[in-house]
Length: 453
Image 1 (cartoon, rainbow, N blue to C red):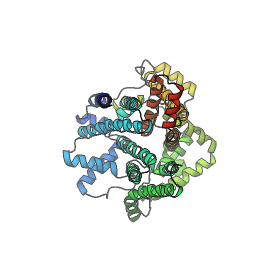
Image 2 (cartoon, rainbow, N blue to C red):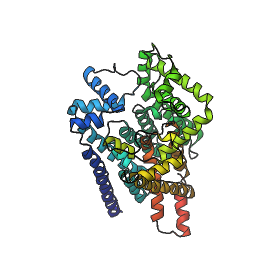
Image 3 (cartoon, rainbow, N blue to C red):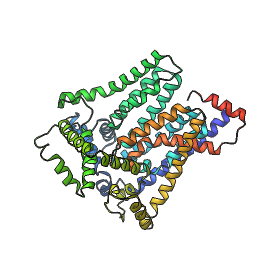
Image 4 (cartoon, rainbow, N blue to C red):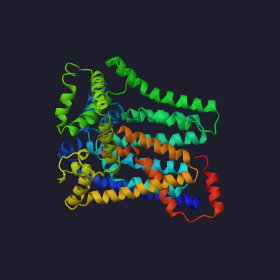
């Protein structure tokens, strides 16, 4: 047994090295120690806001620059690194690479906890180590990498909480999910969908209720300081004002622009008119945007649903090709087109037509994704077959939650938040393929062994 553990640890070390090498390739290709690379490839889009907030934190030692749009933890993370090591973007990205490699280790131990299999854990960790989307996002000044690591830890302790009924694990899991929510608020409603899985039949009803209440209490307790700060400063007990903005910018206005063949700016202007004039409070702006967006969506429910589903499919099946092209300034034959306005036939034709010009990235990356997703469905099937239903169901619920909340925009980078979950299940699927045929008695024993999950 000790010899086997040494072998498994050795294999895990190889996977850790591989994960680091894959990410460091993108790091050196980016050359973030150069000022031109920082201004042209790193400090773009949302990264400029995070950077500005971190610098303001460092300068003013207060949250006065936070207007309610961004949550605080990622700017705090940047500010701490800047304070200790100086304002070195390249070093910050190196830290993110290390954190993303650590996520692969968390995936290994989570998988091993669920399936009691070193092989499944190693394969899951390997799949995440070669995940191109996670690798390239680790070299961007964005919150996804930190969120994924903290969220993965939260799931790991949630598994232990369900499995052993230990209240310490419940507290740690809830606290970590609260922390992750203060990195990216997309998970703020997730506890509603997680809590039912704490009602496991092995425990008595009142103990289950107690664990659920404790989980929700700790989660809300972590959010409380930021929510009360926003209430004091802006009059709204909320963690962010981004919800109304997203509903307007990336949902209602997008549908309107497609249906009426108008630009995004023209669509937003027609929807909002002068509703935001004179409004400085970001939370009040969010309320107005949400109301206007919902009114438009109610008038076009089927069109909205169609494009929401289309955006979800794009997020699941899309490749990180455009992220690579954008970060490394590689010209793309697609230009600035929007995939939602394309038909499936038109998109397929475009991909084939441009394949050679785009270095065959789309077919290569899509093939890899297809294999991983096939193994995911195989893993889910085996989990239900082998009575490991609880985690299988929880995985499907959490992934569905993130898919639905992604909205119409369907950015491929949103998929990275649940990449650890599908890597865990895909790893189990691959391990089932590689597993030697068992006798009927062994299958019975294995099923009995896994009935808890």
